[in-house]
Length: 378
Image: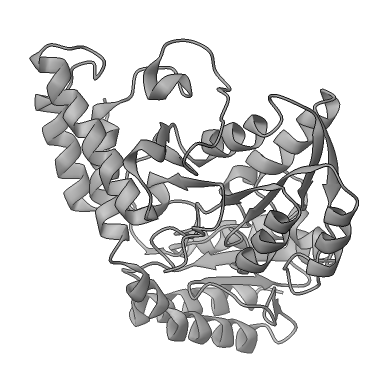
């Protein structure tokens, strides 16, 4: 395999993925050498692999403040969201309440369930600031037959924090199950949505490897597999669990349990970045600025530009950012999130800058200098 140098520059795309911890890389290297067996095998090689898997499960449970028996390991947040949402409609039909703010692994599953006749989807109104409309949620719940409320903890594109606690309490009173996509919240906030019936997590969003995540379920909650096969993960997620990825997940989960304070400290850097961008482009605006937001995300609309062209120009200047959710990268479609917020122009002209626990003031200065050069090319 041809070796290439690691890219250089300023990385401001932590919401897309995080640089893996050196300790996670080392743990995976050790597991690849010493714990490569099949975790389902009963011999010594299998037991060594199983130890990596169960260690990761315990670390995730500690992070999520739940019992290890309620942790189902998956291939990532997308699979966890699919498993949670589909499980709610495995036994009977009903209403799924959600919004267009959700990650595609929730929104597109909702659309699929409606096509399949398994659910009727009630799309919630969204306030201009980027949060769901709790009054409309009350109306949706009063309409009856709601089996599931699915909402995110932190929006991947704007960083807007959803009113999870209030919404979950409303749904619970109406007898509905609650799923929270907490992929962008674990390790970045102290609030891990313990009031939800199910929660999703992805290792690579908290400095672990890709290809592994988890669904966290309330004790005794019935779940139904999306995939059919073996009995791994209590039959809820058939397929051989990768002990190497699990080793990285375990390290990442333990690190994430200590990291929310470091992420909260990014707010001044985020504010400085936004202020500098608005000076460089006075017509620009910050999406979701009036709503509660995560401390590390700056979603900025630049009228007169398209998001993809700005991202490409910044990349040539050595600054990595994105046009929005990484799952939508490479498409020509406008942001469904920003359209739901009622800002159609921003849906095609936005760049998301997401900072991380290793971002420095110098990084922000370099990014602002690069942005000023790019934005001067009118």
